[in-house]
Image (cartoon, helix red, strand yellow):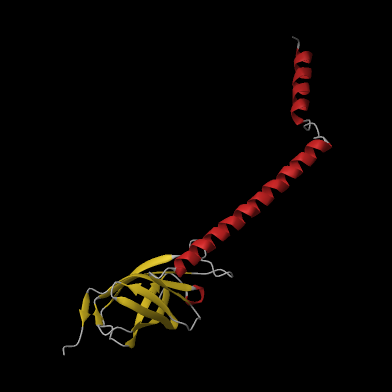
Length: 187
């Protein structure tokens, strides 16, 4: 091949590389738009189903009697069935503390026994506008109470809940309550 043919061939190949791809037909564009719309609808449906499933699991956990569930701002109490009987819990106050929140909690002991060496677990986190736990906000902590939980009384105690600002704390769930030492009066 001579030099002119080679130059023409190079120019032709360069022009082919820069030429725009053939335009999609109107029918192909419509199919693409329809598929994009379908994908968006399916993503919305999946998101809605995930939200419904999270809400259902959350409500099932609340309705069990093996845990007490408290929402911040609520003045009601919640009960928990323990191996020694029913106890009640309520939130008295919440305030900022270091990198989290300090929660003053009332533990109601309607039993005739004082409880010592109390331990329980708490889950806590944020709630969305529908009252469902915000994904990724849930934390768990084991609590030990050194004070005696007196019988027939509300007993105040303070919990330090790390890693959640007071304004973002939406709920506290109390479970796995144990009190290995019971004290009863002698007659």
